[in-house]
Image 1: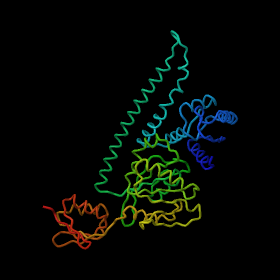
Image 2: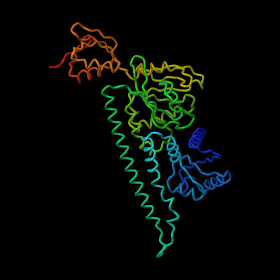
Image 3: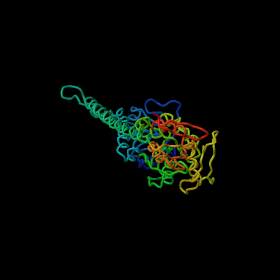
Image 4: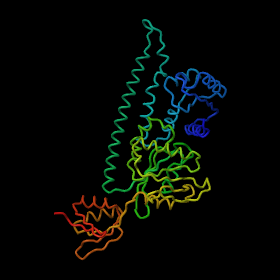
Amino acid sequence: MDPEDVAEFEALARSAGAYPVASVAGSRVHPDPKYFVGSGKAEELRAVAEQHEADVILVDHALSPSQERNLEKLCCRRVLDRNGLILDIFAQRARSFEGKLQVELAQLQHMSTRLVRGWTHLERQKGGIGLRGPGETQLETDRRLIAKRIRTLQGRLDKLQRQRDTSRHVRREVPVPTVALVGYTNAGKSTLFNALTGADAYVADKLFATLDPTVRRVELPQIGEVVLADTVGFVRELPHELVAAFHSTLQESRDADLLLHVVDAHDSKRDERIEQVRAVLSGIGAASVRELLVFNKVDLIQESPRVSTGADDLPAQVWVSAASGAGLSELRVAIAACVRPDLVLRSLHLELRAGGVRSNLYQRNAVRAERARDDGSWDIDVELELSEIERLLGKAGVELLVTDHSVRTKRVA
């Protein structure tokens, strides 16, 4: 087994509040249907747990409910697989109302297939008049209650999703570019977020230190304000229940204008981590969003901050240190270039009754110069995507005429 994967799993355990005392490794071509590991390795696991007086056994793989129960019966200790461990960490980290709902939904979906373990004392009642146990009835009751609770949570999350959609619709009226920070957990996203925005998001050397997304506005050169969103970190083999439950939160990444993919430059497996994050982004429909790789922690590898461009002459990689602040000014310029790659400088002539268009342009921070005419109209130099200029003027009932890189407008009758 890869030592770095073992170290990551130990970090997960510590993040959940556990204290690892021993590890047992093994390899099989196919998982054993009863214990996941072979019977001999299961006996070794039981002996090690007894030797160290362990309270819980953590398995760095997803176990089926029967495998989990069989290991617990053999080892006489609680067994928790990788998915259950990550769910426990998320339950500790969730702070917002939506985050708590999402975690509870994922936990219930994970628990629904493992209920039988809690009622084995009732299932083994003897038969006969007066001796029939209520075990099966209790199981069915619990499954029904859990299914009802899952429907309730899904309804609440759907309502929150509609509210998010409404907020996005309002933002599109006066669009402010959105930049989402994504990356492998513990890559330094929150530290970078704080450095760029001056916020005080929680930072710790733990996996999934921050769970609930934080959103702040930040001023960038040339383009003005953008919205920066710090999202949940990813990890290898992220449980399917969590990807599904956090779909609405992860949608912030899908709807962003730019993804800041933060990478731990000091990580020897950084290329593998990049692909693991991209696989999750592809699963939520964010694969087509422009990506800017940000290699963080360059101070740990004695590298100097720099910017590398791609085939389209736009920044593709930025090397920074969020902790020391090195390279952050270059990163801001790179973000501005990637968020608005098709900016054009155009001159508009707006009649007096097109004052709403003028106000909208100022709200977008797109005005670079303005000259008033004697008749009350304006000549305005704006820096904006040409498609946005056309959409804005067309929506206001204004005809767009382009001649020699200038734009003149008149009210359509």
